[in-house]
Image 1 (cartoon, rainbow, N blue to C red):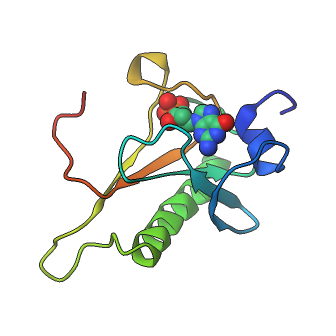
Image 2: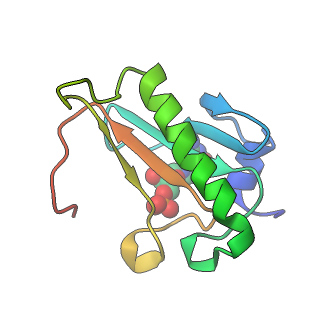
Length: 119
Ligand code: DGP
């Protein structure tokens, strides 16, 4: 997508701080972090959001979660054997849920204690 900001980030037309990259996804640090670690895991292929997912997109969404696990381990946020530590994974789906960029992205948020319910 020509005008999509995350497509431009994926193409490196807009700079970002990389956290992970492979042939399917790019993960980079959020410009407006809500926690000490806030990374966005984004498919390289343009998908609007969960609201437009097709059956053919199932595997990329699974891969995004696997990448989240890898990032958690690499950055030391994986829960330990006592289930301490950890991270929150969030998809905002639609404007009322807080989605502001309409290119599918999984928020990886860590480094502080999380509250429930979210605001
Ligand atoms: P959401 O509100 O769920 O659509 O999340 C979009 C996130 O994208 C938001 O936390 C801020 C982040 N973001 C928006 N523009 C940029 C940008 O140009 N660079 C980076 N690194 N993050 C961005």
